[in-house]
Image 1: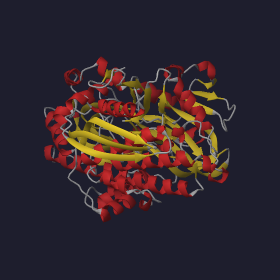
Image 2: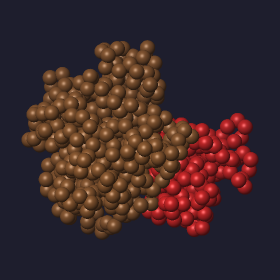
Image 3: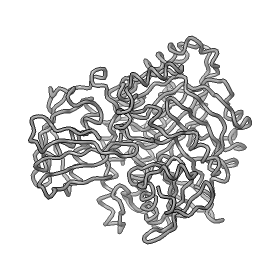
Image 4: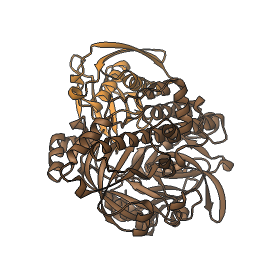
Length: 149
Length: 476
């Protein structure tokens, strides 16, 4: 299982992939819900390429909303999938705020450079499989689901 | 999967008895080794599908079944609209109508000798492959609408291909009942630069040799002969299909309680066939099928041009074009009663047998070609549908090898460069924009397609016609 603590974030923030038969599970964690969702997005980028190779040169604003935290995670990842697909970009930096189930984000990245990024897969969408957003007893937030690649 | 949980009906057929909330039993077609290798999640998913309203006869898993989302990949389930049956966006999946098209070339392996690299390089240059690749085709709003209604028929009318291609495509190239107005602007925008692109992951265009013919009569009807070079394309409905799946999955999951449907797994999101949402999804999904049919038609045309640049004498003819991720309205015989059903095949192939009224005349005696993709280092297969499959599995068969390990495990085990070099040493040329992508798709990451095909044949779902071995592969 690939896992990484994100640089510059709190020690409790990071992401990992968890196994799924044909696809990839993405899991982000952090001290708050926003960080967990940011890290889940980073895990999704890592399913495609090494996020360290993606320069946060251009910023895109994203807004999405949902009835609960879990659908909000799916909406968030799917909004990123849409922006990646229509802009031809990859993203490596995510700044999320959530107020009343409305998520606003500034996401930064750059246009796909196939030879440099070596993208392995194209994310088709975030599934509702293994979809969870929860606060653990330790206070750590976890956000996860399987993405279809 | 623990076989103790199953009733063994034969060496190739197992049952999960209906219990609890299950409306029907589960049925798995596989030998003991394949069943044992299946993840327990396949068991859970077969059981969950059996709980959906209006399901008929059984929740079925093919020999290549593996853990999917909601439905197992390799899952088949039919629903009766007269009994509260449902249509499930999760049961179709994100890549609507992902499928395989195989074309004969009229070339032999000897014709290729020394020019394999020139051929695969020409194809790699002509076919946009991998994430971020964009085709030259841009559809305006009007053309997008026509594509969604017309499928491969639209593509041929627009100059990408030949009329004869349509006869050798499921639905004759155009899925009826498509309603483009149920497709969002976002889905259309995702497709704008993706017509005529291969995609990535397990999508490919492969040059193959017909290494062995097992059924000469069927091979003759399919136009396939031993030693011939064929070309297979595996891809689907691209961004448009993915976005339709994404949007309707959410809508159906949220609407399920209002429809009185308890979802054992949210990914099984579905709506009654007799509901506004169910009808909207069917209209959108059918337009998604047309997008996939149009896309494979365009790719086949681009491949034809590329092959002819290297081999002007080559004549590319479509063997058949099959779809894997669909829900189709079909008539089936259920215990002697003709029924109108909505058959979900998720990672499964329709496999109409001999005599089926929907098949082109040349396949009436043999059953339809069933195209099974393997990995880039092993083999692919052409099978034929059987009459027996109608009573066993609503005329369905397997679709591929299925993964034996996760992508992450594969990249830990292999480097892309190493996979390319090892395959080259065996005479198989790989072209891909991504070494990591190649490592994730390494032949060893897949199950033995031969065992899957053997099980499908022995179970009676389809019969072997020809085995194809890879010569070169453009990997997305």
